[in-house]
Image (cartoon, rainbow, N blue to C red; front, side, top):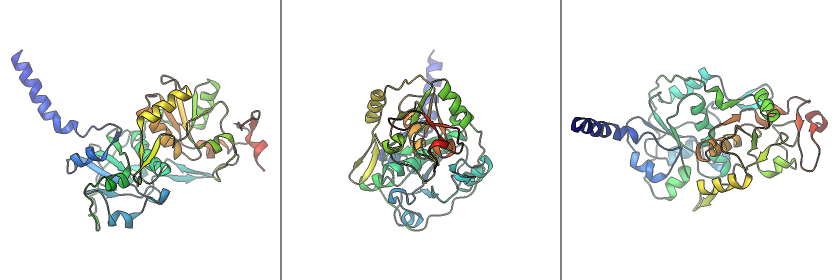
Length: 318
């Protein structure tokens, strides 16, 4: 028995540093500060113009020490196919993109957005989801983004960052996290939970995205706005899990039910998926990548607007 205890203690000692690189889906700046310099950790700064989050020049002016930069909007994390914007690129292209950033399959990735707004948070959530879809579970999001890091007084580096040495990254597509239009229609017919992550105006049809052909939402869906649990504190935006779970409960969502998150183009939906799946306990949640931009491509698809009967996309297109 004593030898088993010694072996177990030794295993824990060996596992200790590794365990630090298995973070929860959402980490705070203090946790990240304690991990700076850890082997096998890559801090990936994805700031972009969304919510005035920044760009490469802003990254070089002020960044988390040791971080690497990849623009969420410009580096190739999403692509347009046909008339649908914001889709997941080909797996091989993403493998190249990630490998060129020096990220390998054994690395833990900490995704850092600007921290400047709720839509900016969706940038981190979308890249987090992308890693998960590619079969890479060692990924987390820095709550508050770079703005939170800076306003809390942690160390900031500047100047041109050293280029990362490219490596091989091999993906295994997790199709259960990626809902197709046909699967969304089947989920609707089966009365599974469909969660629209857009602000209420889009859900009711009062507001229409230029990326969609018609206003409104998928019939029988529920509205959990992507920004409902994000709060601003001292110039940075933080996701509050307690507020999120209260919103989930108020909406009456079943945490055990199959659920699909969607929005206009799969950006706010990524934030919705992250909140539901990774923090809200709805583990059987997938994301409709094409979202309403793809749904409204077919004139026959059903649409729901506030205080109106179900109509078709064709009925709403001018």
